[in-house]
Length: 155
Image 1 (cartoon, rainbow, N blue to C red):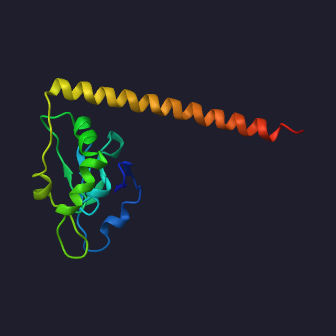
Image 2: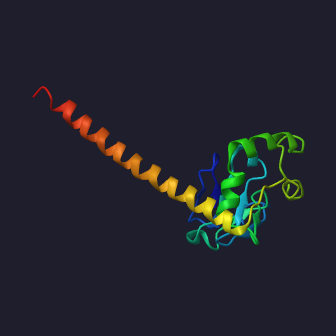
């Protein structure tokens, strides 16, 4: 599986033959884990592994972390804000490609309210995402109607 930038999720690849090529070691990942790209954390390369990605693999440059004692969607929403992840570029280390290693990631501060409040926040944001998607579909449909009407206006 590949991790996209800008909080766009993951891409699954059905070709597992490439896992045998080269010296790169791959690791099997599990649904519910938090993935992040070491080289692109500060570009929003962060996602939760969905159920349909159970058992897919990533390299060591895309670590998977087990989440406990926190609402995983709340955590993703919290660290998925550009105001949170973009400044972390200053903390990346390495020559050439700079990376955010796990030991650095674990030092990042989080504001973690009670689990009940995390659930309320997470549900609110999820409902907002659903509402935005509904309005986006309606807007797309109206654009199609407009296009049809403009094409047929002077017949």
